[in-house]
Length: 540
Image (cartoon, rainbow, N blue to C red; front, side, top):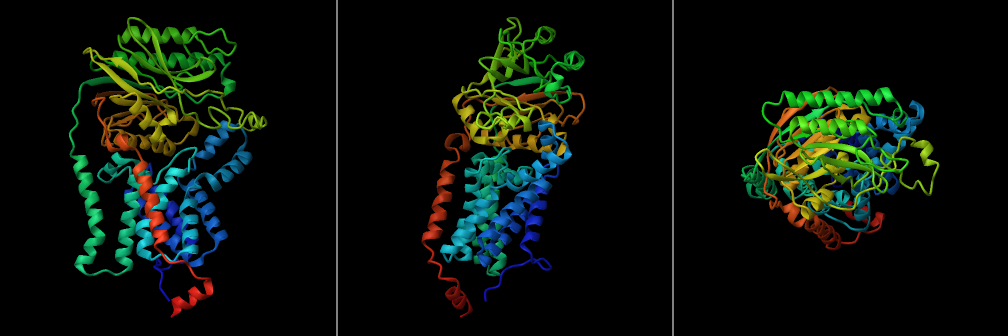
């Protein structure tokens, strides 16, 4: 009988799932241990070995649900606060919704587990062929075919390792693929007890090649056309429920606090600023676009403070507002000096149950469950923004609002359709009331910077305000979370024409490769016999 590799003292697949979920959490922020990412994948590998051995479909489904719940509880527990704040319900109902969410939120693991079950049921695949070809391919396919409310990719487990993450210039899916392949190679090296030097080289050479490629990417120099000096204002405006909309005292204080902090940023700037940046929801609910519609968000006070700040700084003001323009819009706006004209770019990807209610027309009662959900409409145009520096250079940047940064293909399309020199993301994480969520959300910007080869600047209303260069390295110290703060940043732009491999070819060649490897391993393996004959054959 062929022996299966096990961890001494641990024999339950559910223990493997728990350890995998714990290491999953340690690989993400606020910890960021890349080694934990490899250990997470190793324990998932052990679970797939149990699936191959057991060949029980219902057990495989159970593993999927349990792992999803474990990951939600260990890594994304902050969703509990978000659900309570968005729904407005008490702890009991919010907890039930969180548990239901947890069972299915990380359903993408089912692609690996169910794929393993189906392949082992119909084909006798060798360990080498399965873990070198099928195992990494299933992970990449799960990234591709499994959309999530808050997308998390397998490559995200390694975004905090400065050297290993450089391969993300081919895309986060490739970062995940090579990481999983590396785990499989090391597993096979140990499992087969390879001691011969030449054979060991065959297993270690691909990992060595990946390291060398990452070193090459890390050593790259990028020409910089110009430099910008930005003032980033973090007003720490509390998240505002709909009931606050008519609270004159709250809105007046929010406007005054933002103005005072922005004025302080202008006054204390070490040198003339090229732009003043206010994050998403600095002043909630209001806008500067006039409209006769009954649901107009126009505020004269908002207009006055934005124009005053532009005149005081003699620089563009980048800010977020809600406007009525054929419907409710979440806008990334720029108010420019001299002309005092506002240029707007509306948000494309809206947050389900936060910025709109999916299926609300079919199920109107959903509004009673999610009363805080807005009714925004998405933008269909992919246009960059531009601003002029004090030196007279026109700088083009890609505007992102909130969690749009979590979608690599969306950002790739934006940069390709309207080339830019950097990325600026206005965001609001205050609804989650979690340092962990804030840092995880910010961490996604590291990989978007590497994928696009552009600096990424994140301006957050309650933190974490930060910035990353095209290698994912921090360009400024993190501003304190859940506090009012001001940050100054000198950022070097990159040429608009700059292309990374991900921008040029996207994820498609790697997805085709994953499908090819999957079908190759499947159809070049013999058919599985019925369980009795197969058992006898193994025993012989």
